[in-house]
Length: 397
Ligand SMILES: *Cc1c(COP(=O)(O)O)cnc(C)c1O
Image 1 (cartoon, rainbow, N blue to C red):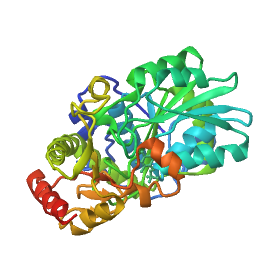
Image 2 (cartoon, rainbow, N blue to C red):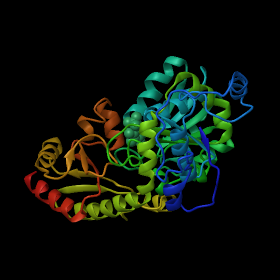
Image 3 (cartoon, rainbow, N blue to C red):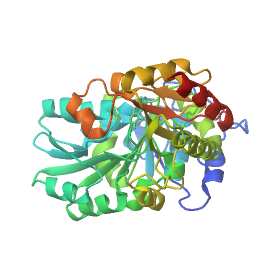
């Protein structure tokens, strides 16, 4: 865990480059990678005092590590959160946020449109520990209100959602949660802290898969929980220390260095995605384009109110169902078929048969995951090359 030491002091680009930097006695300009599990004490008295928390200092890398601290502090500053805790994966961040705070007998309300593994945690894992759930249409604020039971302790949502990019009104849902004393946890992986800061709208916890835009180059898995001091002290701290979902210092270092370019990269992802979305909308065989900042997105006003740009993901539907979707994907020359996202390399996914294949056909239909739907994570290549690649592939479909 690292706290946000200079709240509100710098703009995001400066934070991304310099936030949280600590220098060793060698005065290195690039942040050091501390590959160490333990830390030596001058004497036994010092060991005792560090364990008691009477003096600062590291004890063991399951709890904290200097490279990890730098990454966490930079993330807390970017997110505008009091503190951040890094984890080994995005799912470790999600499960730590949920499992640390919920008890047997509690109830959670979650949006239906969610990353597959998040949905699995809510609907399959939490019930085994006595936590019940209600799934709601995240875009319907009254549905959140109506789902509250006397034992509701948490709201959990993702915005924009995977893969159909629906938007949840963060301020409105945070108000419903806040009025009822419910903790709001937001999965902020699709937006990144550059485009959206859920805590500013009243969320208590914002979780990230740093595997995605934060790494940005498809190299290493990681996650971050950004939260209030109260959430950390009450729930997260003992969970992290004792269950051990700790991030490797090497990954923390990769992600820390990636934050230096996150703002620039996000801007380019968004510019490219907007261009690709407009191009796709002009194609006769494309029956639907979903992009949060396009005027034809049903919630584009809401997206503009809570996000700084439309993000790097475009979803679109090709006429001819699965067969056409496969033909299109297979004909692509630049864009890769893969299920990751937020990479510098553009990636296309057929959600029905991959990321959302475990859902029932009814659940897929409700989310708008049709046979012809493709999710495109628009990378950092030249947008004109991407449009040309798509154009020839659409012809092949
Ligand atoms: C990828 C992703 C996750 C899971 O993160 P991992 O790093 O793969 O564990 C959770 N939520 C969203 C929205 C994601 O895109």
